[in-house]
Amino acid sequence: MSDLLKRFTGWDVAVIAVLVLFVVVASATVDNFASARNLSFLVLDLAPVLLIALPMTLIIVTGEIDLSVASTLGLSSAVMGALWDGGMSIELIVVVCLVLGAVLGAVNGLFVTVFGLPSLAVTIGTLALYRGLALVVLGDAAVAQFPGTWTGWVIGGNAGIPNIVWPLLLLLVVFGVVLHATPFGRSLFVMGANKEAARFGGIRVARTTFWLYVVCGVVSALAGILWTLRYSSARADNGSGLELAVVAAVLLGGVSIFGGRGTLWGVLGGVTLLAALQNALRLADVSNEALTVVTGLLLIISVLAPNAVGAIRSAASRRRPPGGAATSPAPPDPPAPASSPPVQSDPSSSPAVRSS
Image (cartoon, rainbow, N blue to C red; front, top):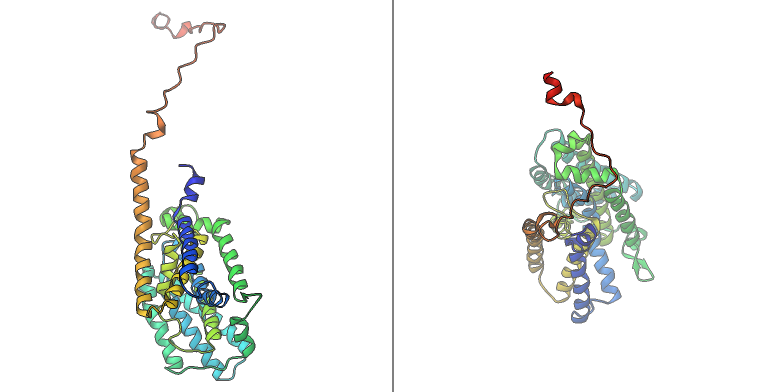
């Protein structure tokens, strides 16, 4: 199978095709699904998931994971509320929250790269730690009354297009170029395929992994800022459980949980498909518990299905005759040219000459 054919029959292309089919069916069968107002809400709903999914894709491609992203979002939101309640300007609060996200990501990167601990165990621990710190900072209170110009920009739009779409597209292009069109992006795939080989190849695995966690922390804090401004409410439990949706969307988009494989446009398809499915179910008055079940099922399917497809392809390639030798006969040897002179043997190399 040629590379071009593989590209158009890959898992990410299948996800995008399912997304288009689902949108067509939902538009025809679910009331108000295709309305401009609902599509605007759909974009606002998928924004934090897509935002965090961008750095999460790079981390999973290297064979690692970060489950503390939702708690980083919640802690950033809590700090934002506490500082705003204390009278700090909103511009300075945004800078402080982004720096806080970098520090939280650096803590994850430090434990994973310097101490060599598994990223799954580290980020499960910081998931609980950061959420607990958020409760320490703000308790069960909520802070509201953020500047109307900021909250209005986040939920507003022009010509039916939400304002938040533009920074999302910018970050999507930046992360896409970095992952798919730079030597740094190619090194991430090498790290995910074989870290030892990457080290022997001169790739600084530990330093790259550390900075990926720092970037993931900054982007998660940015998602916390946007979340707080959208709902005009800073709470310690903001974004609870969002890490499940992020990981499910990334894996649904075709990124291998084992690393070394995946595309950012597939992740975009996975995030949009998951958000559209949840939106349609909400319009159909499905409960939040059922939405959690659906998200969990998609997470299982997104892990099992690509591996099953890969196993089927491997089995098919093993049954295929190597190089097509069984079906195409080898060409006959060309005859020697009649005008070529006969080869003269070296008399000194003959046994008779050596024996004399």
